[in-house]
Length: 400
Image (cartoon, rainbow, N blue to C red; front, side, top):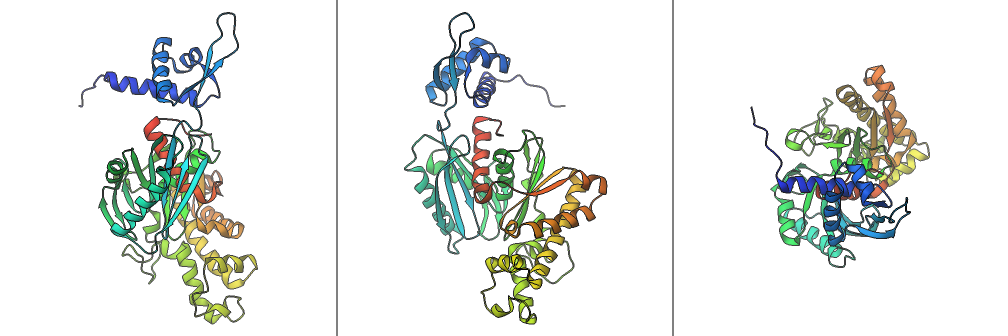
């Protein structure tokens, strides 16, 4: 049995600082006495912590508030731009980064194409992006948060395996932290998307949800009681590489029949290209045999009611819905949010996903589960990476 140990003075101070900062962050203007009431800390402790936060520039004094009979209290707040965060998404073909303030507002956005680069060349592009964001920053940089595909050890910031990037056992967090002199936190891109949606998507604090990112790859982020669940080995949510069909389609992970080969953007485009030559009645037939059938054309064809395009889309939705039905039965989480490029297909796709999920799960659980498209759009992973950074570095309860 492991013995209990008393918290050190440094640990206690850190906990107190996070309590004070959280209470200030959640209020537009508040006095020291009110912070003491909210946190349960003594006024002396609160004053000591506030003095340190004022000196660091994370908190500012607004001036006197309303008096209740004695001396008017000095009101405090956390300025939105007291610190800036660097949030980065490592995409399939593009690196996207942004300077984000403490309220999740994007102050500046930069994109750098990968152009097929991987390994050290992809890292060089990542350094280029960070430099373009950090060097002209208008406020102190709190740190860098990165959302990247692959299996990620979030405790050390190590990329255990990212297939398309040819990164294996890469200490990305430590390497970038040493280079740029700020804390760096790394998470799987689907996990970062889940944090971004939970934090900045207008959801209730502490809500549990599964966020499924469906693009060229497929992955899920699981938030339980407001906390990201990474699982043992940080592999929770790797649903894209779960084999769900006995078919011939090889997956980039080395297996066959994975969800990603059936329900991703790559899969629907490939399937449309295969079927178009045999469907002269389809608007896609004219593009058969070329690379002209892409996601944009497929989205247009579905919107125009093209039968072939709808068949391909709804088949992919059924596979995803069946997987979601399994998640509903396994986790009994009542809120599933879909994000990523496949959401461009809108209501036809969403309706088919919902229908199959409901059919595949216990009715009582399915009836209690909402499945919806996310609210934040393209910067979701960037914002989630910033949210990870704020959670780790400031201990803030990040829901608004």
